[in-house]
Length: 379
Image 1 (cartoon, helix red, strand yellow):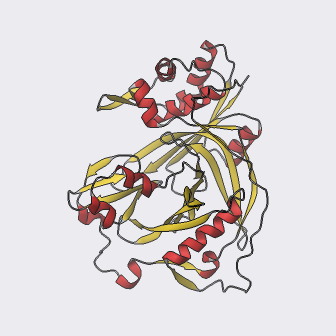
Image 2 (image 1 turned 60 degrees about the horizontal axis):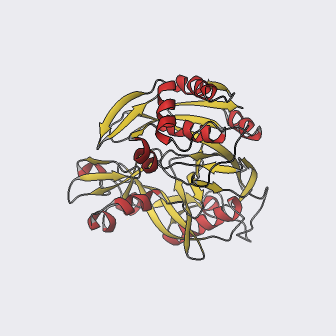
């Protein structure tokens, strides 16, 4: 049985989104083959159009668009913030390198965009005032500080780089278009319907800072399982470290590195499910698991509809070093959004990303996964 969580656990109460809403924006027909340059003002309008269809509980405004570049220096999209009564309330990322355009989004009072996360952790005024925002890998963004030759990403990692590698001034390219984002007019004025959505009653999240402070350890799969254990009533909240390290041991997580007194770990995906089942059994909680390669959207939606949690395991290639990077996240809901003009659907998972305490919507349709696996639980 799922137990009520103690009050000090970080969670967000999510209100069910209204199904199948339409939003008329343009009264006239829009040509489908014409392309137009996306300005800051257009990016704001696109963001507001999306929010009207994807989140109907509050009337959100959009502002502060930040242009997004790939590592070659070509502009590929925008990050736009949402506000409710002047209070920050989420963000959306438009990325033209993906077929669905929207790579991720989040709604909520605690949701911070990747740019805002970097800005809050960056001391250099140069990187905030002059450097472009670079997409260094799927769902990873960084600011280059040419004054000291470093790049800081939205996960708090800083590395030394050659600034010319991430320059928006690329030789041999047409400067009139290299720094501009172009989209079909039909796409710019897109309207959206929320087709279907479901989620658990409570969103469970434990920030990386909290986990590291309590345990001096961190591994993404273990943080995902820690949230799952909270849901299934298998935690002793008076002993965060004991339970976190218990999951670490049960899954055979190994040490990958140590830094500033924190031990970081890596977990074999195929140990995640069985290890969690074993951990829960030791706590007197019966849970079963199923782990598959290349899971489809229904694999996760069926789990959520059954009142259970899941873990998604994603593999990507980092553009800065061309090395695979893996990450596991706890899945606690889903939302299917449809483009009105094309009929194409965006399949997103509500995830605890392992770092922050707010919902992120992961685009499962992303085309550049090196590998994708899923683990569902039933208990």
